Structures are given as structure tokens and as C-alpha cells.
Amino acid sequence: MAEQHFPAGELMKGKRGLIMGVANKNSIAWAIARQLHAQGAELAFTYQGDALLRRVKPLAEGIGSDILVECDVTDDATMDNTFSTLKDKWGKIDFLVHAIAFAGKEQLAGSFIDNTTRDGFRQALDISAYSFVDAARRASAMMNDGGAMVTMTYLGSERVIPNYNVMGVAKAALEACTRYIAADLGPRGIRVNAISAGPIKTLAAAGIGSGRHMFKFNKAASAMRDNTDVVGVAGAALYLLSDLGLSCTGETHHVDGGFHAIGMPQEEPLKDALG
Ligand code: NAD
Image 1 (cartoon, rainbow, N blue to C red):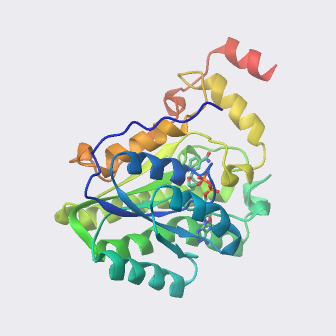
Image 2 (cartoon, rainbow, N blue to C red):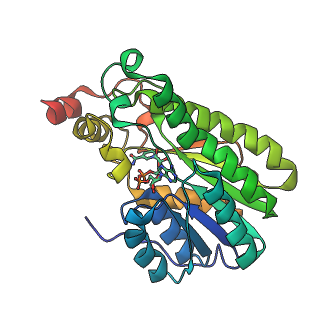
Image 3 (cartoon, rainbow, N blue to C red):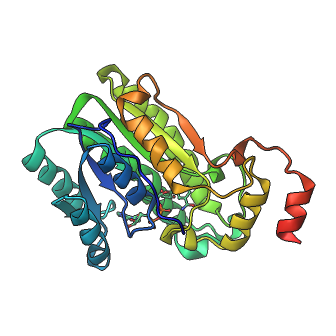
């Protein structure tokens, strides 16, 4: 893979924010963090459990961040600790990146109605949608007016994607939450948006059945005939989190090579890709 390029600048100079959802160097949250850092932002990170600490710590340190807090979004005590640590260190923040989702592997394959259990549904919605409401409430309590928040979603919220199943339902909820949070925080000038990214090779994506087919199909069927570049996703986050994004809130912004815009893909590229 070519080295990712994040152009340097000062769009985020003087701004501080929390990045939730870096698991390793392939995480979408890490690409966003690199982009924000390149534009002068000061960053704090959460990580989920000790197993991920050894991956996240060197990344955070590599961009000069010394605020790294363990946080499992299902555990109120770790959420309390995350935001009280930030309050102690910084007092105020300017932005929040929420890039967290989870559903059990057995929920992400085969038939939606047969394989979606009550517990699986509850867990997916809790971790992937409610956690944004919770984090947004806590972050907004210490956010400067004029701040911004971004969460990550996927087209499986709007259309049926094989095996995405309950995660599609969770993403639909997440997008609705984004609009409601945007309405609550709008009067303070805090903007809240979701980025709907096309498939990107990460740990989370590996958990979805038929991943290889998904990448091949997206490449052949998208307007740009290519898979989504995480650098573009990071660029969209920069726009939405910086003052470039003024007046944009409650939006679900697609960064997927135009895949979402296509009703019926051209025959030839599809035949070539899928045989
Ligand atoms: P990733 O595996 O790198 O990141 C997922 C993160 O969620 C991890 O850091 C993990 O620790 C965190 N997480 C899961 N359960 C948690 C919990 N209980 N508490 C705290 N953190 C928890 O994968 P990614 O693809 O970078 O995913 C980031 C976001 O982007 C997710 O919301 C995902 O649904 C979304 N997204 C991904 C794609 C894709 O194709 N990769 C496309 C569109 C949207």
C-alpha cells in the first residue's frame, strides 16, 4: 500500500479533541487522528483493553500525545474516568471522534431474521449507537461552543448489505442519533455529523462475512471504480471538525467513491470483477 499522505496545515491549530476507536494503524480513527494532527490539533486517545494498548500507545506517542485512557463504552466507570481525565488535563475540548462499533460474529453472517438474537441486537445497538449518545453528552459538557463531533457509519444502514445484518440496524440508529444530537447541540454552535465510508480493510471489517466479495463488488460497482481510500475519509473528518465545515450539521456524508449514488452498476466492470 502506498504511504498515506496527510497534508500539513493549521486548520486545527489551538484545538484539542478526543479520538475514540483506534485499535491499530489500520483503524479509520487513526487516519483521522493523523490528518487532524497534521493540521495542528492536540489529541487524546481512548483504547479498549490492555490487548490494544501495545498497539495504540506507540501510535499516540508518535504524534506527541500523552493522554491515553482505557475505555470500554459499555462500562460507565471507564467512561467516567475518560472524561474526568480529560477535564483534569485540559478543562475544555473542541472536538470528538467516535469510531466504535461491535456486533458478535454470529450476528454478522447468514440470515438476519434467523441469526439476530435479543442479546446480540442489544449489544450491537449499545456499543455501536448508544455509545455515541453517551460520549456526545459527556463531551459536550466540556466542549467549547463552536466545537464539532464526527461518528462513522456505513451504507448498510440505508440498504441491505449481505451479512451486515444487525450492524445495519445499529448504523441506522447511529445516523438518527447524529441528527438528534445535532439538534440538541446546534444552539451552542456545536456541529454533529456522520461519515458513511465505503469498505476499508480494518479489524472491524474483517469480522463481516463475505468481506472479499464486498471489496471486489464495491470496486467494480462504484462511480469511481475503486475502493475507498481512508485518506479521503480523514479529509472529510477534517472538513467536518474544522471551521471549514461551518453550518454543516446533522449530515450523513458519503465517502465511498460514489457507490451510494449508483442504482445499477455497468455490466462490463462487474463481469470482469466477479467473473
Ligand atoms: P477498527 O477495528 O480499527 O475500529 C473499531 C474500534 O471499535 C476499535 O478500536 C475497538 O476497540 C472499538 N470498540 C469496539 N467495541 C468497543 C467497546 N465496547 N468499547 C470501546 N471501544 C470499542 O475498525 P474501523 O473499521 O476503523 O471501525 C471504526 C468505525 O468505522 C466503526 O464504527 C465502523 O463500523 C465504521 N466503519 C468502518 C468501515 C470499514 O469498512 N472498515 C466502513 C464504514 C464505517
